[in-house]
Length: 283
Image 1 (cartoon, one colour):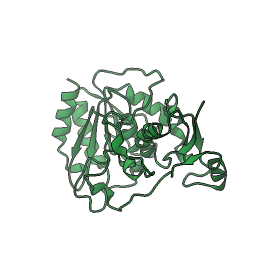
Image 2: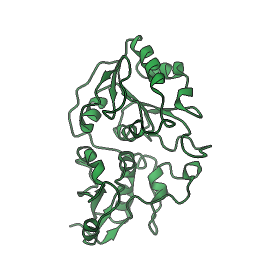
Image 3: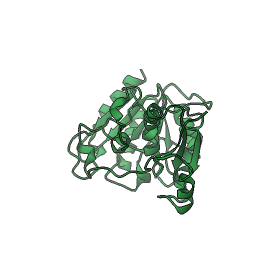
């Protein structure tokens, strides 16, 4: 029998949902055998299939709105013994500069009396998803490319199209097969097989069939990092205001992830360095 009913979650962004998963482990330590309802905003419903069979989620609740909580949601929350604030705000505006912060960006915001992220070991702090579905393995030298975070809205956050065109050109002429994933409105990258029209779940499945992924600090990159053994190269830059240290704070905690950082734009990451790491990982 379940001892407590708990409403929790961080449902406004796909990456936040992925990085929130260790909170479930922390809650289970304080409320053993509790029944947990996991909250997701409506706009993130596409992640539902990826949460199937997660051992610490008893029920998934889709919110009334794309953002925030509605009156219908509040009525449902009241049916639970405990409510953990969903989509909490950061305690300081430049939280990403705090090198003493939790290695999990969502954990640092999580606040409940007596509960602390330091109670989790390093393995428990790594978000993990269950690969319950079949995947089709692609070529040995196949790369899943997720070129832009934020659906290409924030031009300061991700590489330019020119950067990707040049890099993918080099990869292609070194006999790598590149599959492009992301939002359908994103521009096509030269020499890449465009797969952006697939549903998000199918894009993740096809990506996991590739030998590694090239991504930025995006929700899709964080989700891919939840699958044990998957190899990633994440391109990073200091795109947030006055971000001057702790530059890996937004990257995947996947032990098989390699983060490459350059200040003032991902275009400043040497493409030869990216190519060398691809060759190293796929040798």
